[in-house]
Image 1 (cartoon, rainbow, N blue to C red):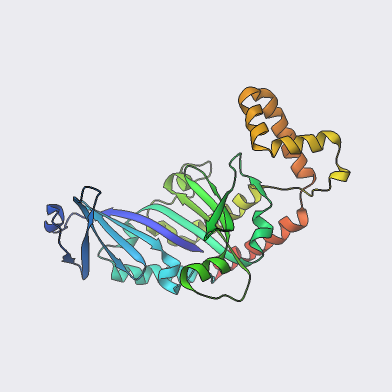
Image 2 (cartoon, helix red, strand yellow):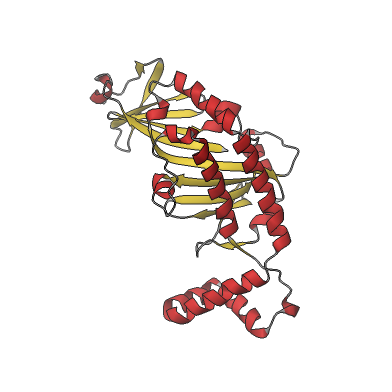
Length: 298
């Protein structure tokens, strides 16, 4: 279920060569570190990789980032379970120059892959707490949608298409990957904090389960298009749906008639609930829930 993780740690015993800012490669802890230059060609740090894991040193701070699942499995279109995650972190910890478990967690992604038509799902998305979905585009093709907020983002995309485009992998099934990305503020400064402070917290099974539930609850909170059987709608309902789904009129009401807009927004939410496509909603949710539970229990 985990994908990209990002963490950092301060190294007190870093060789002095790393502070000199010289434009040369350095060897340390079995890795060859290459200089990182800014736009003025000044050396601001050093970097190296192990498989797909990126390591960067700035001053005395080491940053570790990339997909834990891809490190362990070579892809993120298969299931990645709790037990496999434990093994992946244990393996990574034997390779890195620091104790990965003690590093401060900056970001963690959780995601699952289901067999589903991505466009059929993301074309239904309207907004999440007022945030509109943004199309994900690759090679002039829309292949998913992402909802971005300050401390997190949620996306669903055509994994079959993405795998073909990025690695030339041809998948036979129609796969959709759903991901939730959050930084430490998103996970820890909330009504019910998860408590993710170090990478060691990621191996806590209760917290692993909590992240899976966050992914599911985020999906459920996305407003989606109702059944558009306008012949069954009242005139008032049709007009309300029309103006709320037109960016120009919705923004005009929000800016110039705030109180009326708030009232209309509540009525719009009720309208969506009344005509929600419950069958489609349940199909996708149950597929996601099945995969989340499988990752937790295996």
